[in-house]
Length: 262
Image 1 (cartoon, rainbow, N blue to C red):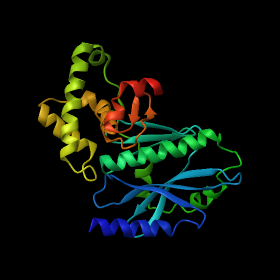
Image 2 (cartoon, one colour; image 1 turned 60 degrees about the vertical axis):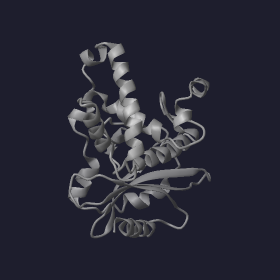
Image 3 (cartoon, rainbow, N blue to C red; image 1 turned 180 degrees about the horizontal axis):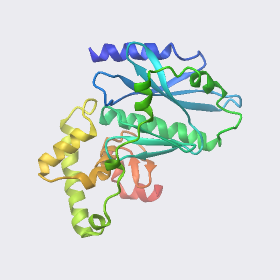
Image 4 (cartoon, rainbow, N blue to C red; image 1 turned 90 degrees about the vertical axis):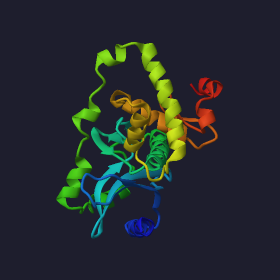
């Protein structure tokens, strides 16, 4: 079963860690290759200054459990939604795209990543500083095969990176906000009727398009952001991107609280 597979994969990841390191998060990612299993993992430990340091590992769990990607979480780490069911992490001029297998996995990943990158900013970790020496252990153990390595370093397609054409944005702002309102309402209903641990944001968007009978291509980013707002499960809404809060559905739409935070 997939549940026992995940348990087995987690166990094999723990074997990669040292006793003083903590596996903060492991999120299963989509792969362009059928049957390939990949995880984005966040590992943390106290550094020399006894402040928490973290890194991201791209782990391939196929015939063996191997490291395919290593990224230090430093003060300049930036996390952005790619508008197509995934997000990008850029640090020190390197950018990598990750697409979690479900909406729930995406929410968990973003929550953890924002926490560890906030710590990196708080302690001003920078490349060439005296921190993250322990990460060299993983950098020296990148051993996934060439095809897996290529996938960790692949950029998303031009299509999902292309900004909306100026015409579509300029076009009738009232019409756009009305469409967003309709999307928001339908999205809540859909998300209450699906298994969020199984469904991807692309599948949710397909259901929306079917329900509203319209192509929502230019609303991809809006839909991803709204999904996260609806998913929020914390009491206090937390801003993760400008104007996107992770909080309970009521918190996230509570104007008074948003004004207080913003």
